[in-house]
Image (tube, rainbow, N blue to C red):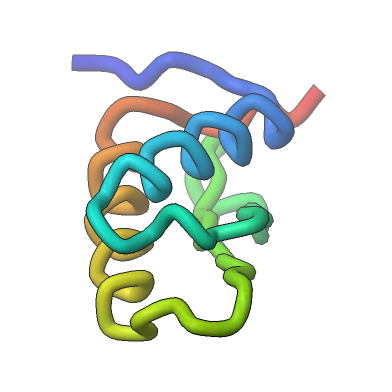
Length: 81
């Protein structure tokens, strides 16, 4: 199954929505995608950086970010242009 190409901005929006959907993550403010071109032509490797307001449960935020990252990596590839 091939992954759908998506822009960095779209991926950040999708990731933010998915992370906020986890219980206890309503205070997540933003998500940034950091990526580098992969050694395979046309692919990228990326990771999520999450910013949350004070009072969030860090363990819940980390779990949501890891789970969301794993799910999105199976579905999307960053479109470089």
